[in-house]
Amino acid sequence: MKRWLFILLTVLVLAACNNNPKGLSDQQEDRAGRSFVANKDTGQDNTQSRGWQRGDQNPNFLNTDGGRVDYDGYIDKARETVNATNEFEAGSIWVNGNRLWVTAYKKGQMSRQERVDAEARLHKKLVKAVPRYEIEVQVKEDRS
Image 1 (cartoon, helix red, strand yellow):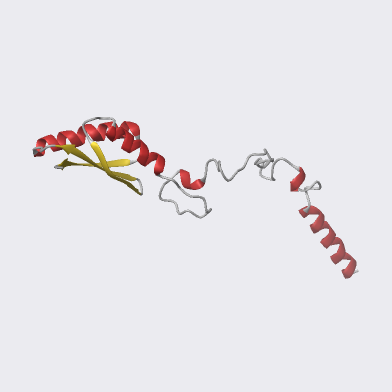
Image 2: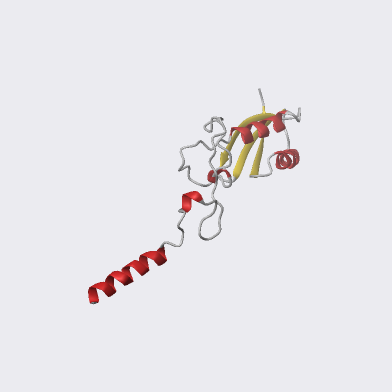
């Protein structure tokens, strides 16, 4: 009698755990109601256009998926902005975390106030061009 009772309880527990007779692979959502992503073959090479990635939202995330987080677009945009002023020539530009460091050169000598004003003008243009980063601008004299 105890054996039959144990078998009956085991069958009831297993039947209660299987409330999804079709299986999760046949449904379009999981038990919590979240939709699954359909990874359909579109015929495109997904290595070229990897789309939005977790590392794209914050430049401080570690690169764990093997894809390359590329700052070249931001650096090129900053370089174009500096060179488009016709007043400055772009020097070194690099990204460190959420900061974009820009060095620009201006022909001739400048007083301290002229340098501060030039940095402010260039900073204002760079913030409009690359608003994602905190921008640090340094203007130096080009004596060549």
